[in-house]
Every structure is written in structure tokens, then in C-alpha cells.
Image 1 (cartoon, rainbow, N blue to C red):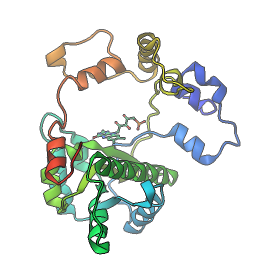
Image 2 (tube, rainbow, N blue to C red):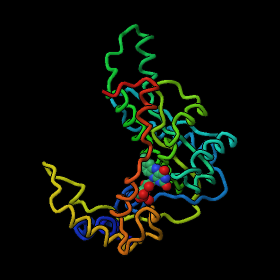
Image 3 (cartoon, rainbow, N blue to C red):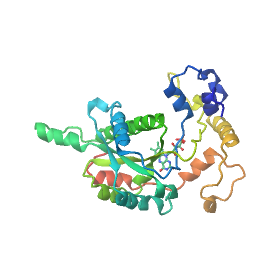
Amino acid sequence: MNDSNMLADRFGVEASDLELRDDAHAVHRQLAGRGSIRQFRDEPVPNQTLRRLCALALCAPTKSDLQQRDIIIVESPALRSRIAAGLTEGRLGQKWLGAIPNLLIFCGNNRRQRQIHALRGKDFANDHLDAFFNASVDAAIALSAFVVAAEAEGLGVCPISAVRNQPDTLARLLRLPDHVFPVAGLAVGFPAARPKRSPRLPLSVTLHYDTYSDDDLSSRIEEYDRRRSAVQPYTSQRYADEFGLAEDYGWSEDKARQYAFPERQHFGDYIRRIGFKLD
Ligand SMILES: Cc1cc2nc3c(=O)[nH]c(=O)nc-3n(C[C@H](O)[C@H](O)[C@H](O)COP(=O)(O)O)c2cc1C
């Protein structure tokens, strides 16, 4: 992809007015050029670096200053192997997770708030969906801030929703108490490959002015499939046994196939079991 017009490369011609000039902020260039990394050098990131990046991530905005998110750095190699074992096996298993140099788990934490209510002798009167939702959003915002901070210093990262495939096992391994839950893991390391810049849906689909619209969605998705396949064709087809081999296999076919089978359908049961009311 061309470096001067990274946003047009990402979003298509309709973003050609968004060219990043030579004097564009470094973080804007970084965001436009970023991509997840799944191949790492066999060398851990120093603990002090991880601590600094976690501290920076925890500077991100947090709902009502409640600070309902925590990060767990999985330091013990034995513990990391046990967690990785659950991530690499089974239908949703991902082999690359067996060889990541550093693993972090971003958690939503509504327990501390409840403890503060006990400490201050006040009822917790918000035992409904918001308690789970706010903590999840806080954790996701911290994850995003970590990604930006880590990529700024040349590290590679990839979030891992697979840590929620078997939440009870992970919760046991990490000794997560009630009302503390994994939102996503994050693989971190020194990259062994250059990031791919995946084209994104056009802004006409994902950016709205005043009111929501999804007019012309099917033609815009078709156009996106074509644009994306031209620069980043899929090298294999998901669930080929079930759906056969498609002649024209693009992003929308891949995403429809992915969610044609349940993933993490028991996560809600787990969240209820650890004490959340989701009404
Ligand atoms: C919450 C979250 C969970 C993710 N989980 C996984 C995962 O389990 N495995 C994986 O390979 N990538 C995972 N990803 C990375 C996405 O697949 C990736 O961000 C997406 O394909 C876009 O690619 P890019 O980050 O290179 O632009 C996750 C991303 C997010 C935000």
C-alpha cells in the first residue's frame, strides 16, 4: 500500500480526500498503517516495558471514573502454557497462540465497586446490565489504549477473544472472583513479520452524519469484497466441508460462514454465574 494515501487504501476512493500529509501526527500515521501481529520473535518483552504500557493503557478514559478494568500479565511460563493449551485445541483452536512470548488478559471488574459499597456502607443499587456493560467497555478502552501505546514503540500485538472460549477454566487458572471477567487477551511481542493493513469497510457504511443509514448495503459490501480481495485475497476458505469451495470467496462470505456456527454461546451463562444480572 502507498504510504501517502493510507486512508484511501484502507477505505477506498471515497476517502481519497483524507490523505495524510507529510506533517501528519505520528500517531495518525501509526493508526492508519497498523495491523495485528501473530508472529513474534522468540524473545519476551521486558517486564518494565509491559508495566509502563499497562500504566499508559490505564490512563485511558473510564466510565464515571469508576476504573472498572484490570490487566493481568501472565508471567509464569507454566501458567501461560496451561492457558494456551485451551486456546489452541478444538474447533475454534488457534495454533499461533501456542507460541506467543507475552500474554495479557484485560478484565472487566465490577467487584471493586461492590466492595467499595460495602466499605462505605451504601447499597449497590445498579445491579443490572449496566454493571456488566460499563466494566466491559472500560476494559475494551484500556485494551485499545495499550495497542496504540505498544505499536508506537514497535511492538506487535493481537487481541484474543479466544480467551473467552472456556471462561470457567480461565477464571480458575487466573483465580478470578465473582464480578471479574475476561474481556480479551492480548498477545504482545517483538514482531517477526510486518503488519498487514487490512482494508476496512467504506466510510459510507460505517460513518454516519446525523442519522443512521444502511442504504445500498449489498452493493457497497460487494464492492468492498472486490476491493479487499484485490489486495488481500483469502488463502483458505472457512468451513469448506460444510459449505464447499466458493468460486468468489470474499470478506462477507467469510464472516457469514464464521457466524453460521455458534461461538462462545455459553459466555452469558458464565457471566450470570459470576453474579451479574443482565436485565
Ligand atoms: C476484541 C478482539 C478480539 C480478537 N480476537 C482475536 C482472536 O482470538 N484471534 C485472532 O487471530 N485475532 C483476534 N482479533 C484480531 C482481529 O482479528 C483483527 O483486529 C481484525 O482481523 C482486523 O485486523 P487488523 O487488526 O490487522 O487490522 C481480535 C480483535 C479484537 C478487537
